[in-house]
Image (cartoon, rainbow, N blue to C red; front, side):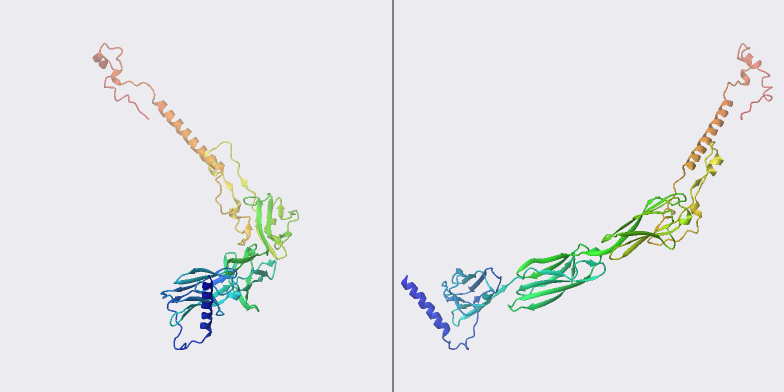
Length: 441
């Protein structure tokens, strides 16, 4: 064991002298690495790095690994450097593999694999230490936004190496930001991205996400939900009547309004006129009884909140009350056909024009009318009456042709002894055939 220790010490001393002494002809023999192969390494701070020196065709030459300060880490399978983080993973004639645990930023640099051939060969392995950024910080200029306004948000990724990349998403749509990269005193990078956009009411509750891309981390992001206020949405609903509005009927309208914040004030007005004095307004409900044509016009529901004001219109047009001709008790062909129901609305050519966005009480004017039950009953009565007349005529016709008929030859047969005598005793024989004839109608 003593001899072995002395031999190792002598080997280390030889290598130290070999590295310290100048080599003659170093300029004449350039460093090549045709048979020596190694790889660059990227490792996250705190993780483990693996350094491998590989020889393609080794002729029993010595392999050693040096740190960026040209200090020997391993000579063959011996570790002269007193750093327990370096551990031998594999040593053979063709490979020297060493692990470095708990990597720090100070370990970053160029490591050297040396092969003592003639001339000596070197290969370099660059270790890059990756430092992930801290948790991204997202900030908004406005906590509460109003519909149609422009807002600004920033996202910051601090103390990373290399510099991070920041992307923005609003819902499922990517938005462009303006990045700014700063190098700090500790040789770290801080990246700030600024996003500017205009909001609308559909953005309320939508998340805005700041996504940080860095080789040391994945799915690193922060998000903030938008709170957007918008002016009311107003809609007038007709509760009664469901069809045309006629004189003498009642009208009931409901104004539905929603917004953010919720509208606190809802009012009814009549455009270019006053609301009828006996109209009843309760909150968003408008009730008018006993309609007449003097109430025609545009009724408007107006709702407002802190963002703005909106309205919806309803155009009222009052038609004549429905009139019908009473159906007589005795149904005849003439009276049934002439029984009609008048539709006054068909003759109202002076009805006012409607706006595209407004409700119109004449909405049912162009719809197909329901067939009147009196007309259907009249048609059925005509058919029944015609069938009764036909049955009476046929009955009388068949009654006239019912009975027993006798021929001329049969007359006198009851008093004759035989057929010949009956013919001879017939009234007049054939002589009277022209006088007595039968007619059929």
